[in-house]
Length: 303
Ligand code: CP
Ligand code: NVA
Image 1 (cartoon, helix red, strand yellow):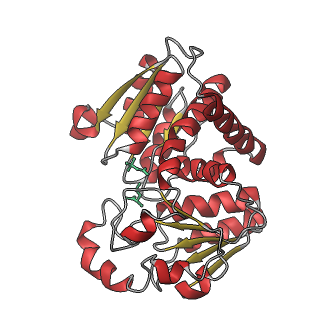
Image 2 (spheres, rainbow, N blue to C red):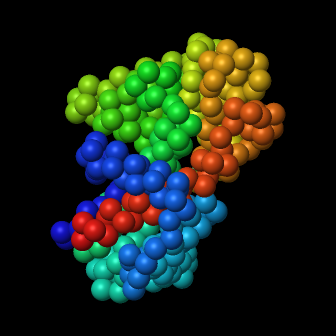
C-alpha cells in the first residue's frame, strides 16, 4: 500500500502538479518516444465508454515503452459480484498501474486502498482529474496565465467542474463557475476547498456576466454518462447556457475555448464556436496523451 495514487487532484502537491505538467509540455515539444518503462504493464478497467482517455493512456504507455491491457467491467468477475478489494489485490500482482473509469468515486477510492500499484482516476461521477490537469497544460501551452486570466466554467457543476475546483484550490487561481440553479457543483466540495485552501471560487448563474472579459472558457456536456434519464429536464434547465458566438463576443478578444469532448453541437456549444478560431479542443485532446505520459512516469517512479 505504499504506492502513490491519482484518484483526485488533491492527491498531488502543487509542486508535483507543476512538475508533471512541465514534463508533459517538454515531451510534447520533442515528441518523446522512449523505452523507460519497457516491461511495465498498464491495465485499464472501464465501466463507461471512452475514446480519448482510453486511447491516450494506451498510446502514452506504449510511447514509454510499456504495454497496456484494456478491460471493460463486463470482462471481469467484478460484473458477477467479485469484491473490488479482491480485484485490486489480484491486479496488483499482474500489472504495474491501473486506470479506472467508474460511476462511483468510491469504487476508485476502495480500489486504491487495497492496491499496491498506482491507481489513476480516468473519470468518475465526481471527478475527472486527468482531464483538468491536461487542460491546464493546454492553457499554459496557449500562453494563458492562470493567475491573471478570467477562467470560467460554463455549464453543469459536474465531474469536470469538480476537478477544476480542486485545481483552482490547490494551485491558488480564481475560478468562476456559471451553472443553472440546481446544477451547481457539490456544496460539500466547495466547503472543503474553502476550508483547506481558502479557494477563490465564485458561483454565478448568468452566462452573460460569466463570459464578460473571460479569457479561458470551459464547457462540457449537459448530460453526463449515467444521467441519460434526466435528458429532457436538463435540456430545459440549461436553456441559455449554449456557448454561441453572441456569448463569445462578450469574452476577451484573445479568449480560448476548451471542451473536453465529446461535444454535443447545438446543446452546450454551437458548431460555429467549436470549429471556430478560439477553439483549442483538438490540441486539448492531443495533450491528454502527453499529460498521461508524464503522469505515468511520475507515478511509476514513485513506486
Ligand atoms: N474527454 C474524455 O474523457 O473523453 P472520453 O470520454 O472519450 O475518454
Ligand atoms: N462530464 C462528462 C465528461 C465526459 C468526458 C461525462 O461524465 O460524461
